Length: 211
Image 1 (cartoon, rainbow, N blue to C red):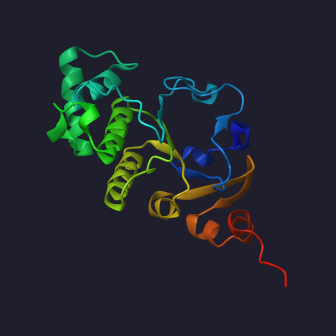
Image 2 (image 1 turned 45 degrees about the horizontal axis):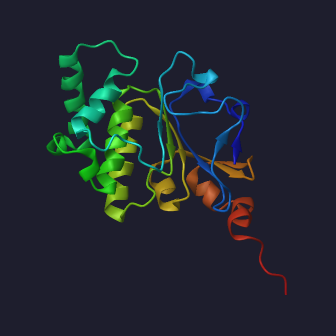
């Protein structure tokens, strides 16, 4: 899947929660042009804070939960150590992880690790959050908890671009959906409209068998 940023527009600078919806047989995403790695900024996001949450955890496993968020809170910020720790604890309370602040990240469940990743992104105060199948491997209850955090981050003013194959997740949190097929935009609209779009159904399920 190749995403060309020049095809996108942001209508009236409104905060929107977009979801990129490639058919399940399409491979991993690659940004066309300058590639995106952690803590690297897109040209279109110059001057803005851009954070990334992928479907694989890359957190320092031996650091505590609090230390993980503190490190993220220092990224691009000028704060004293005391203020960083205080803000990190507020973020952990927001994510429902404050009771695990002294635990090593390596001891957390998969669901708590996902929430810790989101807490770390929030600590950077991003204006744009990229989520790549953030609910992958989670139980139903863990998925609900993560989606609730995404909704709350959006309410705080963060624009979210969410790549996901979980249709329930899409319907639960997304305001607008962009469907990609072999790297090209196939359709765009509300989740309900995309769920019933004939071209989207054909791309995912295929044409009815001819008799």
